[in-house]
Length: 568
Image 1 (spheres, helix red, strand yellow):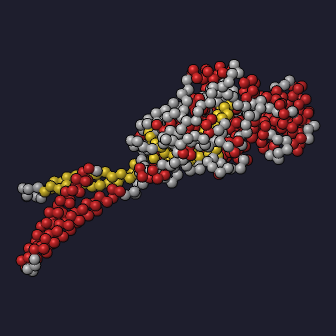
Image 2 (image 1 turned 30 degrees about the vertical axis):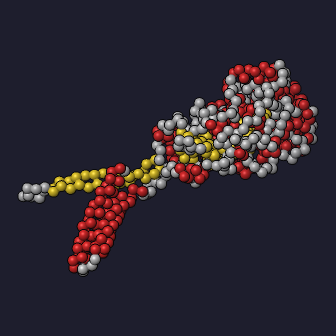
Image 3 (image 1 turned 90 degrees about the vertical axis):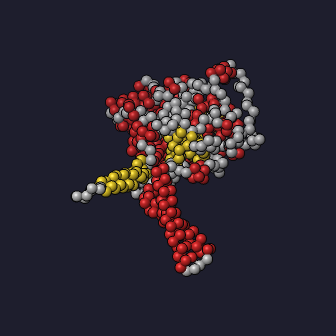
């Protein structure tokens, strides 16, 4: 590239020299032959020089014009100007920072869903989840399996509105909320059967490595849904829980037969309860035993007393997330995620279904921050929501470690997530297949390279030889970033992909170091967590409420709590 610019200068100088010669001859002709004055001689010299320079520069441009050709691809990274035009917003979800010294926060304010791909311990919480929990002026549903994000942002989220922490095992030490998924089953609701089917589908789940036979799982869903309908229609309010359903499934053979006989006599729910019992009783003894065993296996996690306490009643409804700003955290200890993943599936599915039925309010959509998304497995409500619910006041943000997690859970349907994501955030890629997919998504560009050669020729019977040289410019195809370049991207940088826009290389956000977030987060330590747990265990007053703090510099006014003073 530098050589071409040097050559350009040489061409221009050569043109100016020729122009001076041509101008001088023209001046002599005008002065001596035509007898014109000195002014015309000067004009002719200037015009000749200018013409020579233009011809020389044009010759260089014609020679190298093909360098900017896009015959092999036109992919390129977005310019700084385009980044500022499309991502430097006063509001929206924080997705990075301009890749320059002192660069501002980048915000994504499109209504579509988002997707983040980054390996474990690479800064997903530090750069994506926590910054948005600190600044997000909307309701948030946060899947926080380890409780780290809850501890850092709990006090801040309380400044926006009510916070409900579903933490059956007391990981965070926060006041615990309760939610009973069975509360949605209203005997007078015409959608009762579908509601029960959604809950049963969330309960019956096999990880990809332990897939059971589809027949047993489908029949187990039908049996569990029928028992849910029976409990919802025949039991008093305090007993309408999943713990009661588990009790019915775990009874003795005589007790289970008595339950089925009771269901056969039921006229509730338009005969749905009776039909569920008849479906099971019509099977052979061997098949019925297999279905019952499968249903018991999928509800085994309901034997947890802690979990049943968290589902014994409801302190809120998911529809509250649309009618007012509030935050819901779902927390599990890391060593219990596999065992109790069905509880997470249950609440995510129920939350999406309830919000889909609630009319959308004016203002930003409810944000679903789904950390450790792969723990949910394949969940039909999520797949459906990714294609439809951007227009229902819900915005999903799944967070994955690599593409294998998405492919493993959804197979060919993984394209639903990729094609409906309005922004894909990628950083610290450590998996080659993921890097290769990113490389292909970035596209190809056209690059130029030069070749040069020399030749020597001498005619017969001649003492002197003729030397010649040539330089050629060629165009070739090259990935904008190869897979290894994607994997070697600096740890402080990230790639943002958006439909219809050039990719962006941005800096990752670090909430603990960036000035925009100072004073907004709580430093979660084992000591503060122990204090909260001790206060709750002793039934003592909880830790005092934090005073609303002014929004730190850089956050938009829309990201301040309603009563917080403006930044000074």
